[in-house]
Amino acid sequence: MHIAIGADHAGFRYKERIRAFLSDWGYNVADFGTHSEAPVDYPLIIRPVAQAIARGVFERGVVLGGSGNGEAIVANRIRGVRCTLCWNVESARYARRHNDANMLALGERLVAESELVPILRVWLTTPFEGGRHLRRIQQIDVVTV
Image 1 (tube, rainbow, N blue to C red):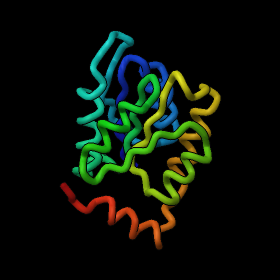
Image 2: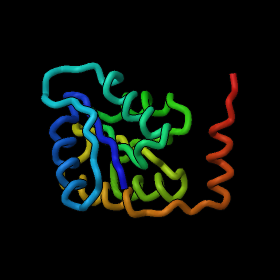
Image 3: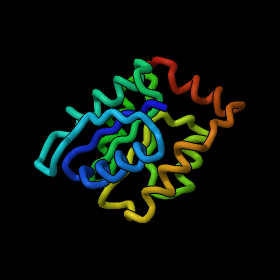
C-alpha cells in the first residue's frame, strides 16, 4: 500500500515516528513535510497530501497537527477525500468500517504517544463494511450549493 504523510510543526514529531513505523511495516511512504519543528502553515502541506489521495496516487494518507482538526478540515475540502480525526482505537475502527476513511488526522497534543501504533494499525487493517455505509458515502459526494 502507498501512503502519503504530512504534518505541520505541531505534528512533526509524531509524523516522524509514524513514517518510521509505516516503513518498518513494509508500506511505501511519501513524506510531504514538514521537515522540522519550524512554524509552517498547515494548509500548504495538507492540501497536496489530500489532492494526491483524491487523484489516486496514494491509497491512504495520514496528516498530523496539534489537534488534527485543521488538518481534517483542509483535507475534507478535496472531493473524494474522507479524512477522519481519530483519538483512540475505536474511533479509528469506525472511521474505516463505516466511513471508508482514506485519510487519518491525528493531533499530537491530544493523542498519547502510546496510542499511535494501536490507532494506526487498526486504521490500516480494518476493512470497510459497505452495505448501507456505501450508500451514505455516495450521498456525501453529491455536489450541492
